[in-house]
Figure (cartoon, rainbow over the protein chains, first blue to last red):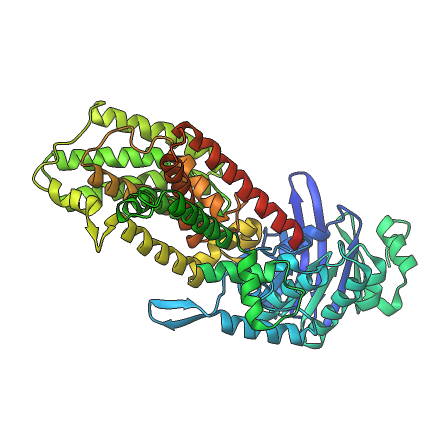
Length: 246
Length: 341
């Protein structure tokens, strides 16, 4: 059974139809590349899964059960984490403090509880090790490279034992060497059985790591097939509309 | 708090890339921390003044004076620091202090007990903070504008409530009230003890509590904090309440010390308070600062003021010196920041 299944999801903003009858099923241990031109509906779809706003029509099933998200917190509680393009990290805090933000480990008893930074550093160190990332827990995010920032953001998702991770353009603003690092992080998440959705403009990244490719065009799903059965040329055609449906 | 500052800078600072023995790491942390350099400046100025004016500067009387004169500014700087760390500002502290002083004076004048005067003062501060914080956090208005409005409004309330008269007939409980702010324990003014206790308390909250961590997170990246699930609006509201209440505490002790309440109390103090936080190392963009920073910033300003008086320099020059130190402090921060990048 799919971890998350979207059935005939539609979304209207006034007269504008952002998504029309989109079906999508996500399985654990799979990376799905979500592609499409600007305005094709990628971010609308992600925002619906992340609980930023409800769909106008259709149904979402989490492990077979219908779910309704009213706030991002609802989606997170259900095990869906989003790693945002701008990374949404606090530069003035340490890597560990970012990983544990709003779910800090405390020590002490009753009302006398203080932050347990040592335990948080330790846990963050483990998470970074699992991701095979050279990120130091006690270092400030301000000092970090793009790849390390991605590791921090992904460790956040990892900490909550998320089942579904939505990655919004993770490789948009980083150097070539760091891109390889980030794609490795995605493979690590897949190994651990998570369903990963990679939203990207970069064809090479998607063909590098994804198992399946989904293409949106003007709110419609025009392709949903194994990456082996497709090619960059075909996907380009689908995105631009030169090819209708694949 | 100093520990947090230095720890921050070790990781943020120029030294992160260099490997060195743990002992020298601590020294390097200190060298990179702004509060450390402000402390050095205070020590140097005190040493020079003790040498130039051995008869008047290094005396217990002068020490008592200096510490008491920055104590109430330092108390407010702690509250201001909390707001500034979130990336906000509170321009209304001086006026809130004035209004609180008048409220306390009126309660005492009516023959009410001292504790009621204290409670009424704190409630006045809390109410002003709730209005500031509510408008900033829940209506999304800029803190600069909201608190500028409160600066005008609270002062006007103070003038209206006092009927523009000084209040000095404090009724039966006036003596107790005056002892709170005007008294001393072990040769140190009560106000200074209060400042030290509050500095420790704020330092603890900033460093060891979830609330403190979230205050820093909001200043670092408000949108990220919100996405992570930090109760951004509630915490922002609370920081303005905390700030206004430190202004109320300052008013309570100053009115007690002076033995009278005037509606002009606190006029212009917002600048001294904000200057203290900035000199101590707060970043007006948010995310940086600490409790010790507020204390040492307030100390430096008062030590400069006192030294200029002692050196016989026209008191009109004080502003120039304090201004120069503010710019110097920001410049130092900038240099440090560029090296860190």
